[in-house]
Length: 179
Image 1 (cartoon, rainbow, N blue to C red):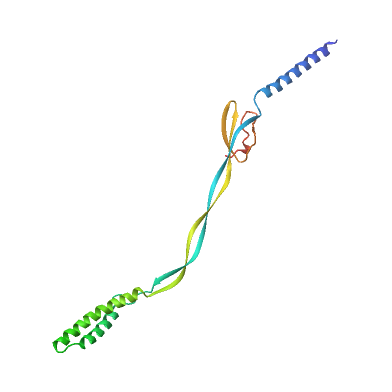
Image 2 (image 1 turned 90 degrees about the vertical axis):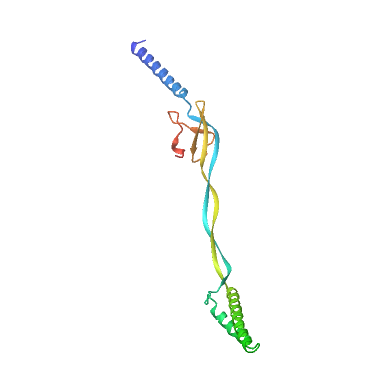
């Protein structure tokens, strides 16, 4: 056998052995996937406000024009005085007239007060309040996985299934991880 063939054969054998060793080293250096041990969906509650309005019947008191009830007092005093004047004679008539005027004034004042309190009207008004519609949306998934004998957790935007892809340095591929 000639020398060149022998050297070529040895170099070829060395190359094949080195390639096999390198391939075995890459396979043994670590897994290319991490096993998923748990996946928990993370929900987010959303409260959406909206206005809820309805028409209601309301009874209101009309505005009072005579706060001191002067008209009722005056009319009552005149009527009471006239009635008192019909009683008795002489000084008794004067006293009865004054007493009738005072009593009539008081009675007229109270009558006007009662009428003013009951002087109402009815109308409809719109009453609104804020109601909330509650819904849930998926905010992601908390994924627990085992790598090198340790359990770690990462939040992802989708359920990865039974395993997570690892990069060449043994880290979870972060293209699917929510940051």
